[in-house]
Length: 578
Image (cartoon, rainbow, N blue to C red; front, side, top):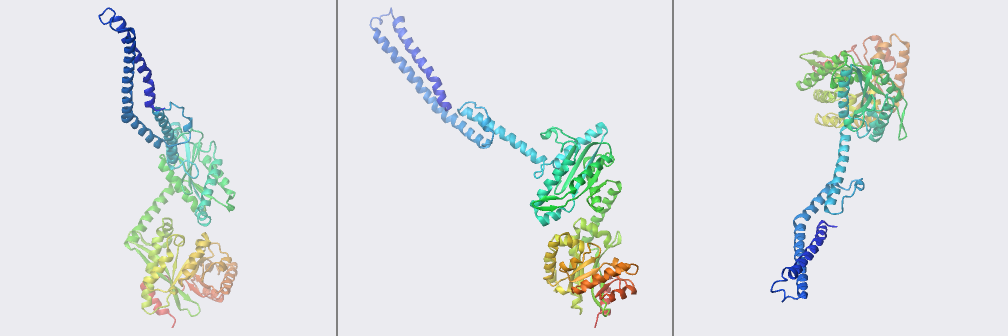
């Protein structure tokens, strides 16, 4: 019932009471007060009654009319605004689940407003909890996230300082997770992350993870597992006796991940690299412990993956050197400190020059002459390798253009590609653009890829190689013998040239097994019409041996060391076949 109707019904009895009182008063007045007056004889009893009834009716109508006017004004100036407020609160409160549990507080406008307020409060509570969950928990795995980990680390630091205890921070990164995403898709990758998190939680002592009371749950254990981002997890192990306790946890995690995962009928083998930092010897602040655990994890990856390493101060020094080198590389790109050297490739048939291999060198004013082995690995880690790679290709194309204009239209220069240039960026379109810009044909370029880089993702690599071959570019498999070294790949990979690693050439004078292996490799390559190049040839004995194996080309100090561009042109002029 509407509030205005309730108001009307509540005052009708008052109106009736007022009317009766008015009539009774009138009747008493004419029958008692004026009984001795001169009018009393002239007013009969019936008239007094009629007059009293008329007075009552008139009073009732006047009161009722007044109430109707009040009702209309209440509706116009009050209830309509209440209805509008009620509608707004219902819109805000929505029709969230659980509203039916609210105890009714009347069915008028005030009751409806109270009901809407209760729904709004409940829905806001639900939204607040959802927002806190999003703020402190990972949506995919349900694990605590970085923000939650930071809070727990601060709590652990406070407790450890107060109780004089140790705790461990273990930074975990899955090995080769990117290959799973690339080959099987992100859906399988997400499902794998969920399964990994469940396996790791099973290996932790106590409860699965800690969530403090301020996050909505009680403190239930001594171990925390948090997902930071992507395939990175962090374990927080409180109240440990020393490093051995942390290593036992890390080993249990590795053991737990050792059996294959079955995701949508795909069998996936997944390892992890972990770095361990111990409070207080490895850090007394949260960020310091996380950073040092990350450095230790990086060292574990460099040591072969699927293992764990404890942080050492030497790692911090190495990290500083790496960061300094990275900054120096950036400056070198800006200041054009890199230069190209060209290593001649010689045809064994007539010992004429067949082309060059472009090799980058760094002539730093501060650090001196720096070899690629000192800066290329750091460039690959920091993605600077793509910028360096572009610089090498662009400058090589400029030199090829210059040599073509000087009478060597068929010159071929070989360029090494990193795995980043195969799997990231757009090397194909970049090559296509530069070839057009400098008027270079595909026959002038040879692209070298290594076994290990190609086999990181064979399907993507083969697709990339075929695109380059469509431009007429020659493809060489570099450093053969240092990676998987499976002769099967000579049949399956779309390559034109096979470069034998110098480690084979060095060993031929001492190991008969190396001679037999090389003989088999050359026989298979020749049968498949694959051009062969022997790298690192340094003496006449090696030359004679690989000649007997029908090797096509050689590179090495026996003929020439890598040359600056100016000397390379001179060498080209002196050793070209006529």
